[in-house]
Amino acid sequence: MDMPSPDYPEVRRLHLFSGMAGEHYGALMRGAYVQNFPPQIELITEGETSDFLHIILSGSVDLFSSWNGRETSIATVRPISTFILAATIRDAPYLMSARTLEKSRIVLIPSQDVRAVFEVDNEFARAIVTELAQRYRAIVKITKNLKLRTSLERLANYLLQQREQAGGASAFDLEFEKRRLASLLGMTPENLSRAFKGLRPYGVSVKGNHIVIDIDKGIERFAKPDPLIDDPDS
Image (cartoon, rainbow, N blue to C red; front, top):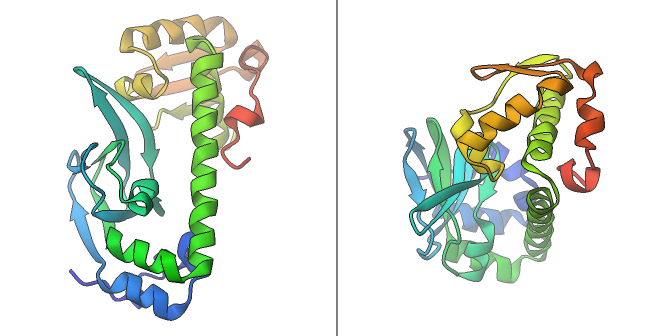
């Protein structure tokens, strides 16, 4: 379906688009459209050429990759944000695949239109550079987490992040199922199960997807959270 830009002010408010000239934004969105996708629909496939820039308005999307019969989750995309910008700008093949985790509403903007406006709108170009820099830093943090920490330390820091997102509550539910969590943390499901058991002395108990943390038993001293790895905004 066509997407008149006034109908989606939340897209215009994104940092990527907020500073660009009105006529350029109108030209960019003229060929855009919105689709509703059910869960577990593959939106893009790694190795294919980037035809669209995607903006998720509602729902959630799993970015993942496969090789030699193995698959790993790389990141979760939530509203309102874009994916995968670098392939669109470079007119290059996708390095990751993407699928919906739940019913999702997504804007698709033709990649050729994004590149055309990138060439003529300086504010848009600067916003793209800023966003790509932020995503580069996020990848560096993910790499440091995987290479510098043990599986137990990675799980401990992930749980502390989830606790913070839950407002510091001592009990909360995992945001997705354990198999996918294991993949995001670079572990097998079996290793994840052992890691949960390994955190019991530090006040972590788990039942299904429900987590309880007794913060006084030392999980923060064990995890040693570091803003240069764990702070998404730094």
